[in-house]
Length: 307
Image 1 (tube, rainbow, N blue to C red):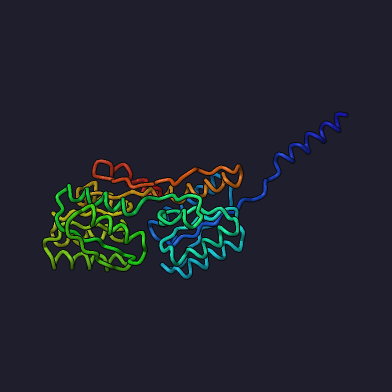
Image 2: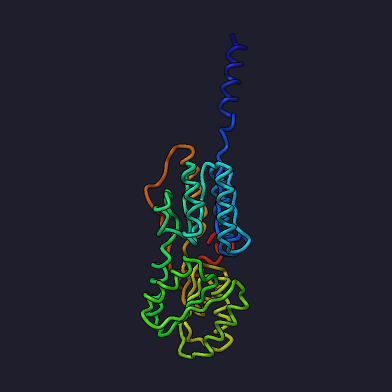
């Protein structure tokens, strides 16, 4: 009898210890993990996978390429994951692939870009910020700080999210704004910002759309010209730009908390796969303006790839 009870106890223990069927979640974005911004997103993705115990993969095209990104989404659908996370920088290009995922019964959450089209594509919810509203908030703040003529430096023209940032900035600023297109090369950005400031001394406000790629080079350009009067702000964070903010060399950074954009969709899909739980609406991760008073507190977290 004791042997029987012991056998039952062992069997019960093994049953409890047996691993549940693995949950697979695939994340497909337009941003490469070696990009300073997207590396933080990937850190959030990995942390969520670690905390929830799901198998999670992060995938992105080698460059900003919507054809390749659509193919990555199709490949993910073919693997029949328990959940799919996507960014949507170009809804026209990516809608067919995303709709195939939805039609296949795969729960899809969007993040970072695409809040305005997510629901129409059958996506469950969006984690991110309204890019137009964030740009508008930046414009209002910079105008209140005394800005009179601005430039918006866009390192990825054609990315709808970035274009909306410049549009929102122009509306909120309420004064003349010119868009300066560049590539994702900090040296080119610095050269173009310097040329814009030299060619038009009335330009006293610069909005960048990425901290390390645009914000830091913009400060370097203004400093090289001795233009301490130029108000410089940027979307997103980097330890270098936050240092400029804390020193008064830059106005503020716009934090959309991209770690949350990576973490929350994976966590939500893991809970959905396990318990059928899902929030009832979009989750705004930003914007938050990080000014001089707060910059010092988040420099270390930025250096750690969390902020």
